[in-house]
Image (cartoon, rainbow, N blue to C red):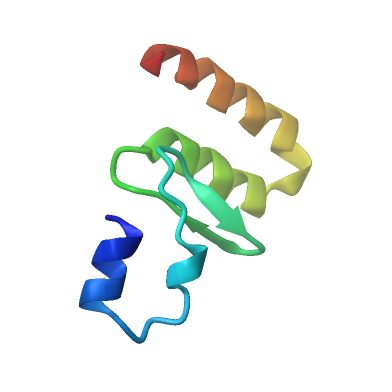
Length: 70
């Protein structure tokens, strides 16, 4: 999905300027989103929101699985 697609299909969507075309999960406050090709970073971001005290562990998980995709 691209910003162009969003603007063509949902011209009045006010958040189109916030779209990030990245291969990993992104989050803002309590919202986490990702494409279907980013399940590990999505899970890590989600767990970091639910268990903030475990964020060092979730960062390690992201680094570990990122090596698989390099």
